[in-house]
Amino acid sequence: MAMAHLAETYACVPATERGRGILISGDPRSDTIAYCNGRSVIIQQLGAPLEASIYGEHAYQATVARFSPNGEWVATADVSGVIRIWGRYGDRALKNEFRVLSGRIDDLQWSPDGLRIVACGDGKGKSFVRAFIKFITVSSDKKGLIYDGKTGEKIGELPMEDGHKGSIYAGSWSPDSKQVWEIFFLSRWDSGPPFKFKLSHREHSNFVNCVRFSPDGSKFITVSSDKKGLIYDGKTGEKIGELPMEDGHKGSIYAGSWSPDSKQVLTVSADKTAKVWEIMEDGCGKLRRTLECPGSGGVDDMLVGCLWQNDYLVIVSLGGTITIFSASDLDKSPVSFSGHMKSITSLVCLPQGGQKVFLSSSYDGIITRWIQGTGYDGKLVRKGSSQIKCLAAVGEEIITSGFDNKVWRVPVNDDQCGDTEPVDVGSQPRGIAVAVQIPELALVSIDSGVVMLRGLKIISETKLGYAVTTSAISPDGAEAVVGAEDGKLHIYSIAGDTLTEEAVLEKHRGTITAICYSPDASMFASADSNREAVVWDRESREVKLKNMLYHTARINCLAWSSDNHLIATGSLDTSVIVYELDKPASNRITIKGAHLGGVYGVAFGDENSLISAGEDACVRVWKIEPQ
Image 1 (tube, helix red, strand yellow):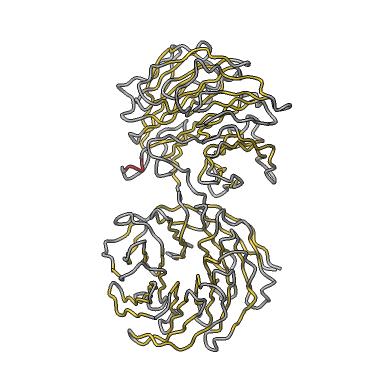
Image 2 (tube, helix red, strand yellow):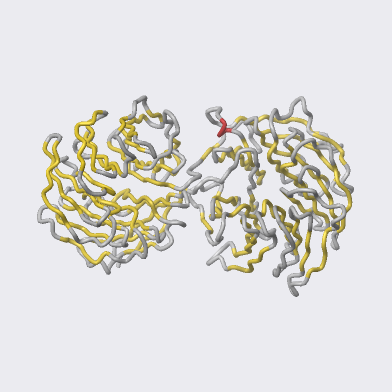
């Protein structure tokens, strides 16, 4: 039996939120970073972006991920207040799971000795916690609780009388594991164990977004929406200096990160710049360099996260683009890569210049261009940024529709989209199909029928008298198959602008969800909401491959290989199944857990490679090994 293995992962970007910084964790031993998007935790190799791995075991949206000091474990947290500690390698064994807060966890940090964790966020009461380590939690109920991992008993509590008056956004351990800083509008120091309040500072005049101890423990920095960065003594907690305002950021500072030698700091801001500062012995900062990240200058270019890891300066924009500078050579051009932040709704192949190029569109209207073997190759710049529901591509054009009545036919030149005007088809499109051999001819399915387009002109509008769910048009434009809500397939011949019904096929037992002609037009495949796919012979209209019933939920998408030998299905059950036409359906290739939340796009790169995309906003390339 043939096999499939994962060859490349084009990971989603970090989830961002305007007005709020994001957290990026790093493991200096392996030059990897970790960040969150939805329920997924992504571990990304900085030197090899295609070698990303994804952890998806949280039941709710993940908010932060941190590597343990020895790099063997990862602690992750989510909006429900749960922390999971799991093995980074192998089968990612779960060491422990516990609920530390009753609301969102915004930050967590391992103590340098790996024996405690500080977690902070939004809580509404005490939570009993059992863990394999000692840890402290701080939350918006102004309480900090410490538990012993061996007995599960509470061993300490931060004093309430001097506590915070609001949600706590970040925390940081001193390198000696004896002090914790938490921040809200002020910054507060607790020393221990046992932890007790020591002092607080109110030098900032707006929200404090990040606090970080230097690696040697001699200093720590706080950065704020008041555009200030303040330096404190790591032993006494007293303020000793600040980043000069004359060279400083012109917008809120969202994050800061120390260099490994504790002599420099990287900061990022809403003013779309990153700055590298030298920190003098007296605690004052001196600007070394202002870094400009590539971008269009729009809101998405605001910088909201950063990490200084070995020679890598990692910077994240509001739009999710990750830009990497070299700390030892700031004049060197940075490397940038990006992807989707929201779930992917469509995936199409667009061969260009001998390269295997793919386009994926996401719910937020982003169209990303990928090259197999290279990965991210930019985003298509479109007129407007409307949401995308359907996407088709042929030649040098893409055809899109959203959640209104309009269809856009857009010429594409590299990453630029030409000017065009939309066509109003009278109802929200349910699907778009293109006649590959006659690329100007497109069939748009709407609730009540189909609309045929030639270029930007509507040449026919056909009311069909039943609820239409999807449709396909043959490569030569001579035939169309229309899928109905009642599970029937209606075959139409096309002559000019007229559709004539030729046959009705009644094999399916659920609503038709996808239809696709084979490249040689001798067959077509259909799939339904009752998890079944069928391959039909076009001429005889007989079933060519049956019993394709191995998904456990709705089938969302279909794709043919270029040699007409393989058919792939993607489903809401998170899996992809590949069938060989000359073998029984039971001899299938099943890729389980291909995409967290479901698969919404499949396409073949060649006879031996399959690309998939889904709810997790990731794109993956699978190599199919013949038997």
